[in-house]
Length: 366
Image: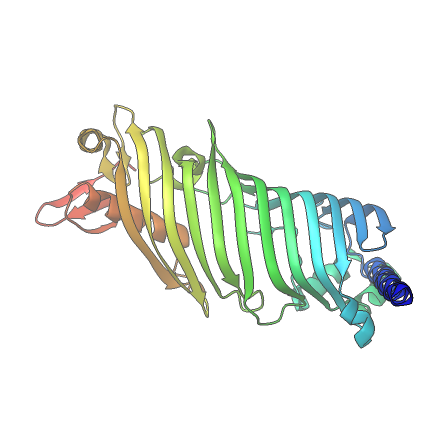
């Protein structure tokens, strides 16, 4: 019995040692691939090969052209898939990737040019990389050594996201998400057509307080098809003021949004039904309108409803259609739903007016 116990203990030691050797070997392989494919503008303060994972600390990434800060990561832990070593494939296979306390920054200019921290696969990325590396003898070498990556599970813990949007109707919008936890499964780079499960939770920063935001579903990162639920609670309406400024010429003094929606995109066709609950919605006395409804009329209607309005909506459209404007579509649907919830028999909305059944139109301030 004693010999049998020693044999079992020896086997256990060999299994653990084998696991550590394979893990360490794969971590060194991933480190080599990372160093070979380092993108322009990316800096890593420290790379350490641990027995079970690869640790990257002090990661910073800026756009190589605009020099805007796009990403900062305190630490990234990469746990390799041992099957990749046993299978002998050249693909970087990762069973788990943890990103701890990252900060992501997104920008959109007045002209609609979008800059973000996540790379795009294909010709567009290659052209950008070639321009950034023009004159460098390492440019072509890095391009030819681009790795294929598969990640079973990606986790972001305690992250933050900042979006600076200049393409608005009013002043620049600053949208901020804090305490962000994200999990995405079955990721591939370059992207392949698979349904990658996604779950997101975070706090949306407002002027006076933070609201809660959560989303769950799947996304196909190659086709951009998706099916997601979106839930928000106590998000301040005024955080979106730059987007609705031209539709709301009266001053909204308070109000927060609770919303439940289901967002589906198939072949660039958007379908997003949902329900929005506007709570503690208050409009200051004076001239102006809210989504084309005169403020004076709206104030009294809101008082009769306890300054709370529930609206149902459904946003549909072709994202490839240049005539489809998502922001305008959302504003129009919200205007109709708001008017109907207040008892106004609306048939259409647009061009600075709400059209009522049998009453002509009620014009709002432009």
